[in-house]
Amino acid sequence: MYKAVFLDKDGTLVKDVPYNVAIEKIKFYPDIFRPLQQLCQAGYKLIVISNQSGISKGYFIESELIRAFDFLTTYLGGHAIPIIDYYYCPHAEGLKEPECTCRKPQPGLLMQAAQEHAIDLSNSWMIGDIMADVAAGNAAGCKTILLDRDQHYRTEVESTIYAHRPDYVCGDFFDVWSTIINDKN
Ligand SMILES: [Mg+2]
Ligand SMILES: [Zn+2]
Image 1: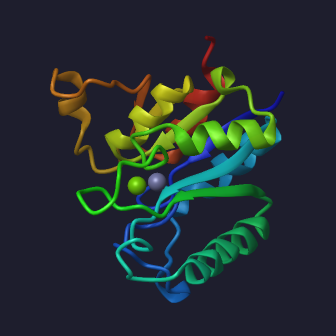
Image 2 (image 1 turned 120 degrees about the vertical axis):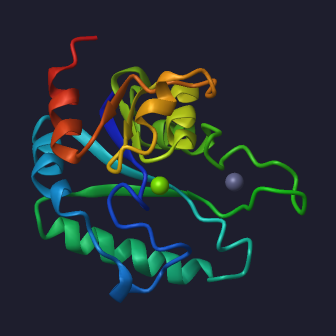
Image 3 (image 1 turned 60 degrees about the horizontal axis):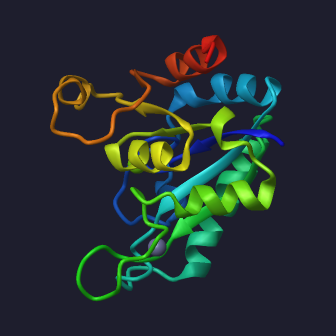
């Protein structure tokens, strides 16, 4: 069994441009590179877990999304950061479709990834910038980090409005790295 760091894409690895699949608009956060290299060296598989309702809404087609993922793989691979797979939910929330089991906060994508890559979920982490990421990670049995770059959630997480809590709240990716490396649980 392997251990993994599951990564949300938008707002976590790259700046959140809603429904974007255009390569030229993909902007990586500069703090991700060293920490992700170190996590790979520490034996974590890196897998992207992404909600992509733009497919269901007709904003882009699957092949355009795959092209964007391929760009991520190539770019990060060039920085010694292998992304071993991508899992995405193409469905939209709302009334038009029956509720799927893969759109975060559901854990379906994580469960599928774990099965296909022999991942031990209890020794793995879900990193994301919103509480839906945290809820998905918790439901899958992962440890969870809310990456709260703009300190939007920091106070809210401590209140009772969310049913799910992250194990940790981090302000940047260096904080994510040191949290995972130093975690003793
Ligand atoms: Mg996000
Ligand atoms: Zn889905």
